[in-house]
Amino acid sequence: MICAKSASLQYSDHGKEVFACRAVDLVIGSGEFLGILGPSGSGKSSLLYLLSGLKTPTQGEVSFQGQNMSKLPEDQRSRLRLKEFGFVFQQPYLLGYLTALENVLLAVPGQPQKEEASDLLTKLDLQDKSHRLPHELSGGERQRVCVARALLGSPKVIFADEPTAALDHRNGLQVVNLLDENRGEGSLVMVTHDPSMLEQADRVVHLSDGTIQVE
Image 1 (cartoon, rainbow, N blue to C red):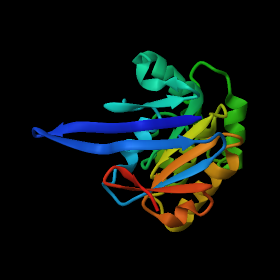
Image 2: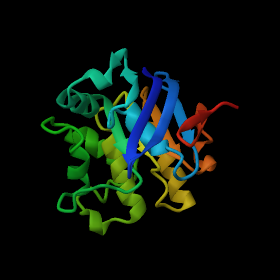
Image 3: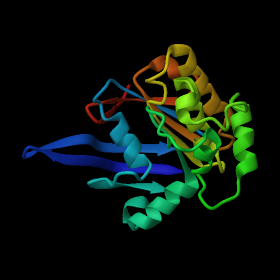
């Protein structure tokens, strides 16, 4: 489904060339739960951004269903991400003036999917919080709203970038379980520094200095 071939992400830091990711070869299968494990600064987020088309590789390529995403115009990449991918980030990025339900519906603008959004919030035990604003929710509840938003529309791939880092262990495991249990036939790609969050993963790759380590 997603294939990275010698994908690198390089940037200039005060005149010095630095690799956030270096020559990554990785294939993610349909329906797979892939964990990407590594310490802070190892390039995990950079790799996730490459795999999801949020960043373009400076070398190599990343393809989705056989289509090289880096060759698509930015507007087409944006539409692809909106249609095919769901995202959960470390911090629960919610619009403060929208209710929980309205924040979930942002995942599919212009499409009437209120019933599905309400059903997802119910599955995530937020049925009584759907009309509350973000500041009226706990940290764990806000992250569950983000999970519902990522799941709306049954995306083919869900990308989760340290989604449990701001939560305690119990709430962190709950978020991972909810993502895994409700993703249907979609793939889940999650980066974390905590191996206990990847016990359900089908496969875990280890990243160090932007390179996948072969065990």
